[in-house]
Structure formats: structure tokens, C-alpha cells
Length: 187
Ligand SMILES: NC(=O)c1ccc[n+]([C@@H]2O[C@H](COP(=O)([O-])OP(=O)(O)OC[C@H]3O[C@@H](n4cnc5c(N)ncnc54)[C@H](OP(=O)(O)O)[C@@H]3O)[C@@H](O)[C@H]2O)c1
Image 1 (cartoon, rainbow, N blue to C red):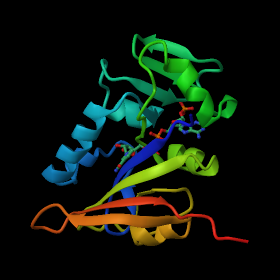
Image 2: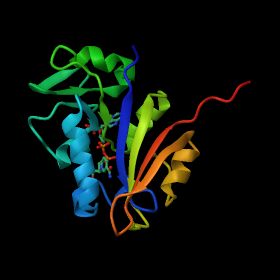
Image 3: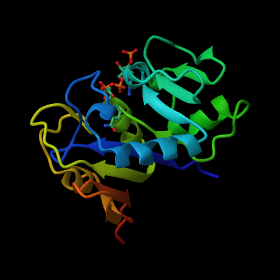
Image 4: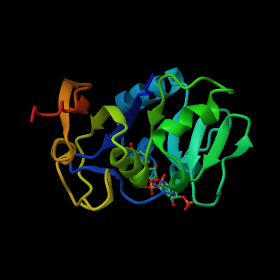
């Protein structure tokens, strides 16, 4: 059975995930986004993230797969945290790496930009939980490499993801949008 990865991402209204590397979403995202995020992470078997995202929110007891070119082969630096080099792997290799610790059933992709790029390039994003906060940064880290300020639905839409659900989380207008890869068109 194929493992389905869910991308969880919070953006500004102009499509950025952070104002700079090291900027924590906790400093600008709404309490409702944070509650949603921590519920998903608490329910997930494993989270996949880049080294910087790991370092910004180091949680020693979480189950994490951490992308870094500092390693050549998988390296368990803590009992539930393995560092891997994504140049040497595909998404379908990840379950076998971690199943002996905890089976990979509902993994999350937690960013940042290069991690999003990697999963998208491998067509391995099955679902997206996108939270859009009513703030604009003008500049910052994009969801995918190469994007400037862009409406988040546009940047996902141009990569083939369509809206499956959309609701407002609070009075300031934070939106929680679910997206999925659009079905292939018949030839
Ligand atoms: N708003 C959100 O939803 C959200 C989500 C995630 C992160 N963030 C924020 O974004 C910032 C971090 O994101 P970031 O994009 O700067 O960094 P990042 O993706 O967390 O980490 C980048 C590092 O991870 C490794 N890496 C990741 N993908 C790789 C790939 N495909 N190939 C090779 N190496 C890869 C490399 O580590 P080495 O340098 O060790 O080789 C790279 O330097 C933080 O401020 C964080 O809080 C926000």
C-alpha cells in the first residue's frame, strides 16, 4: 500500500511561510492555526522536515525525519529522530527506515521550502492542510522555490492542486483550506 503524505503549511495572504529563515510561525500565526497544527502533529506517526525547521522548534521526543546533507546514510541522533539525506532517497523509501520504531501510517510534511519542493517533485503530496493568515509579508520564504508574493491558492493551483474544502477558523478571517492533487485529465 502506498504511504500518503499530508503537507501541513501556514502562509501569509501573499504566500510566504516565514519572513526569514528562523522565523517561527508561532510569532505570526493565529491561536486557531496553532491549535490545528499541534492537533495534527500530535495525531501523526511521523513528521518530515528540513534541518532548519527542526532547529527552530527542537522537540526531542517527537517522531521526526530530518532532511540534511550533513549525513550520507540515515543517522539516528535520538531514539525517535533520524537524519537522512534526501539526495539518496525517494518518498517510498521512508516507511522502511522508521517502521521498526513506529509504523508510518499518516505522516506529515512540515517544510520548509526545499522539503515542499522535494515531495512535489516526487508527486508524493496526497493532501494539503493549508492555513492562510490575513497578514502580508511582501518578502520572505516561499512555499515552493522561486515564487514571489503570490496568492496561496494560485501557487498551489499552478502546481496541480485543487481545493477540496475551505472554512474560516476565527473572526480575523484565518482560512483553513484542504487541497488535493487534481485528477489527471483523460487523454
Ligand atoms: N509556516 C509554515 O508552515 C512553516 C513550515 C516550515 C517551516 N517554516 C519556517 O521556515 C523556516 C525554515 O525553512 P527553510 O526553508 O529555511 O529551511 P528547512 O527546509 O527547514 O531546512 C533547510 C535545510 O534542510 C535540509 N534540506 C531540506 N530539504 C532538502 C533537500 N531537498 N535537499 C537537501 N537538503 C535539504 C538542508 O540541510 P543542511 O543545510 O543541513 O544540508 C537545508 O539547508 C523556519 O523559520 C521555520 O519556522 C514555516
